[in-house]
Image 1 (cartoon, rainbow, N blue to C red):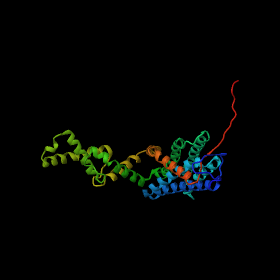
Image 2 (cartoon, rainbow, N blue to C red):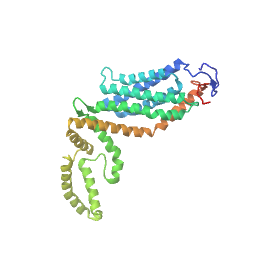
Image 3 (spheres, rainbow, N blue to C red):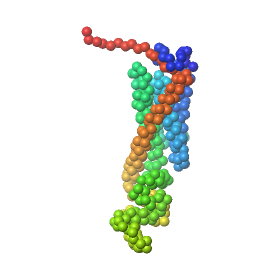
Image 4 (cartoon, rainbow, N blue to C red):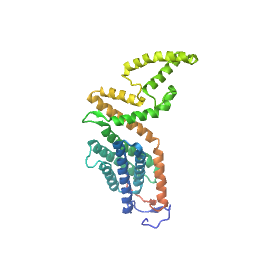
Length: 335
């Protein structure tokens, strides 16, 4: 209940101060708890390599982003907002207890700083506006808040992806990434290689490539007798595979293509110097960061819409109400 008996939608005149400490604490606890859940399930996905937890991770991240938008409108004291952000930063770090990796600590600090800047930007926009402009405020803070989450996730990912002390990559994560990339790219690859499948062996993929090349060089190849096609194909395949292996390394034709590709990439990465591996791991992590950030940008509107619906629902339910503050200020004018 609000301290004033106002009708829903009615605008009253009063000072702009925080009034319901219990509701502020509730919003804060929900934000901190959702932040902890986001970090916990993301970390669990990387530890167990069970990416079925990622949808829940994304849902919790969206919940925090929505609560961030709402809290900027609900809470007037920047000190209280800072406390919520600080405790959220502590929450995302707490999942690593009792061993706190350096990158996780840095990620938590980055999470706190960028999220705090988003809060400050939103608070300033609200305090400098004469009318509530929900979407204008939301649009200005969501990109920063998303960046905070993704940078934290990128640093935690790097902590698992590359062992700096041992100077080596996480082969299990590489295997998952390569398999996912091949499966995701299969429809696009099929445009160029109709016979391609992510389940193919190495030899089957090479045969699909060779068939495509022969078809390009001999446009009427399909008109040849099947026995002639098979003889030409078999005679060409051995030389074709030998040429490919001279360029990229040995190919075990009976192994699945994804495993062959992973072995080739591993051999290539193992040829890097210690510094080269570190640079590659950093570059790969940030390429992944920018790809995901680009995908996330497509859904900013959905986060803002969810927050707006909940904002209006909270007004209608009496959880919050719209008020009007009378302002006066001094100014100087030339005579």
